[in-house]
Image 1 (cartoon, rainbow, N blue to C red):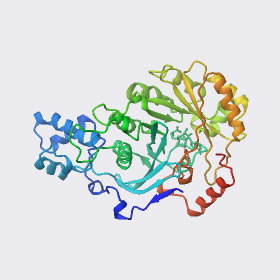
Image 2 (tube, helix red, strand yellow):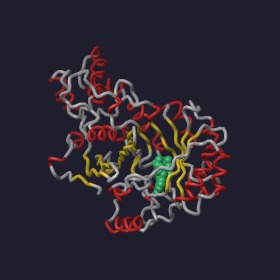
Image 3 (cartoon, protein in one colour):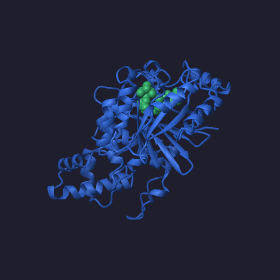
Image 4 (tube, rainbow, N blue to C red):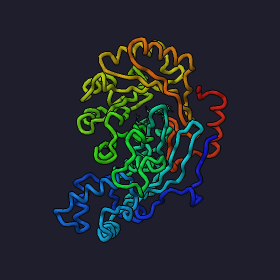
Length: 409
Ligand code: SAH
Ligand code: SF4
């Protein structure tokens, strides 16, 4: 049975927002130069600033500290001054759900930016044999309107800030026990191989390349070797095909790339992934072919959602193989995850297997991605924030759809 942890119960409640809600600037999400400027603002003498930034970096990203008072290598007096001006508090976690398959989903609430309202964002953790993947959101809602995607039915509310993107990783590490206990002596840090979150994917809500600068900043901090130290090979950015952002992702961020392909002919892709009208298949695949750092060891993942009678024929599989010729690639076949009001059905299992076998036989690894966390609506394309949280009647309808087998597990 899935479990929802009741966060109104104080004993279950993780660190709650305090300073962050008071509107103080957050230190999480600042790069080193910005932290140096923040130290200047807190009155740290110039010759000490770099050293203080290194200390802070360690506390924030190696130790996962969310309270200045725990940073005991920094004098109490400076901690107080920092606390007056800045915050390192975590956001409010509205809900934590644990699926019967171990998938976890957190709903986090972020304070308003400017005149806006608070926003809510979903982050999903998927444990698998030998690895654990965190699926991070980059926007609240999405400007794009892919017809099979639930997020696409929600208008863009706003871009997430670097801090809001990064803190999704920090919260997951807190909740999964990936940070050392605050009393652990310096030097006795959890080794990387013992961690639960081993990989991150920018595959939550939103189109990361329409929030490029903030995503870049967050991912460069996540991969910084003196902090969170996630290898760039374990970070994947997924795009629906914002062509001008693709080369920049390779040169400026250097992470792995995934493309939401879903169709192999422009006519169909224009319908399923409407950004295709702006950047059609040829341009998209040329950008992939030229992806900086591409090699057999660093392949592009092409995501392909299996929609019954729409894009799942053997002819589609053949065209897919033809299109990807010469591009070091993996193909992820994603069984369509239904949502209330969606116009599609998931392909039959046999159809998916025939498709996968053909693609495999032509030299492409093409795992069929088992849907995870469907019982807590954490599967691909099911995310939608609180601002439009599923009504109970919709939830019941979705459950009925899955029981009736339309979900094709
Ligand atoms: N906006 C980015 C990243 C987020 S979507 C992008 O489109 O790539 C993450 C993946 O889930 C994408 O490949 C998306 O196409 C897929 N997806 C969306 N809705 C889905 C659904 N209902 N069932 C299965 N996969 C879905
Ligand atoms: Fe946006 Fe990606 Fe969903 Fe398309 S699939 S609507 S780009 S989140």
